[in-house]
Length: 306
Ligand code: HSE
Image (cartoon, rainbow, N blue to C red):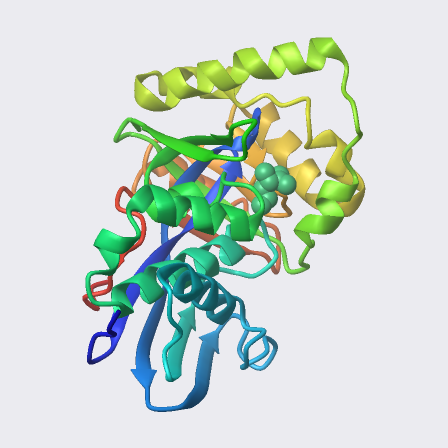
């Protein structure tokens, strides 16, 4: 096995998981990208981070991208003599927009690119499986890798799977990003061990409807984004986010908690639409807000374009 000369670059999208009823299974890639560059060195490990995480994340073997790269090199059979990694992060951390999945996908993708013939040694299904194993669940890593709207899960034997669904070009999103982070582990800790059968049945129906709504019936998005399995249980960790979801939904806007929160995602009929502009204006004071399109590409070589 040999390594390639020169740096390799990747851009990886933010992702919103769950989308209301699709807990741990539905995810959407959004047009907000972390950009990373990696290269093999003669020795050592050099990690640079700018943007989110700068001055906060460890710049050594504990760095999440480095850990994902190491796991991928192990899978491919050999570690490089040394490594340089540069990360330019625009996806907010611990906000429910898939920053850790973006880091993991970037790591597995960069490591594979640094190996000559890496794509032949580790195909896309194997890369998804590795990324999902590292993250623990596939609903963010799958759209981060594949782009678009993705339905994903894990079989009883542990195999992760992912299938892309189509997205109506009218569909866009506005994300409202609170100032305070919520750790996914804490948000998962609020969920009950069991839920009423009626709630599970309601979510199954809504999740199925959401596949149809996103693919060509956006007029069904309000009904299709109702959730009974996770959002309400998570209210104690993100009361302002739940209040915003309720306020938007009262006004007919299909709004959900993005992933494990606390970001709120509202579906629109496109980022340039008057609907999106009106929504941006409803951003609570101090929060961040982005009007976004759906990213249809997923992890891809970074050619420097916006
Ligand atoms: N489906 C996950 C959750 C997404 O809601 O906990 C977090 O990464």
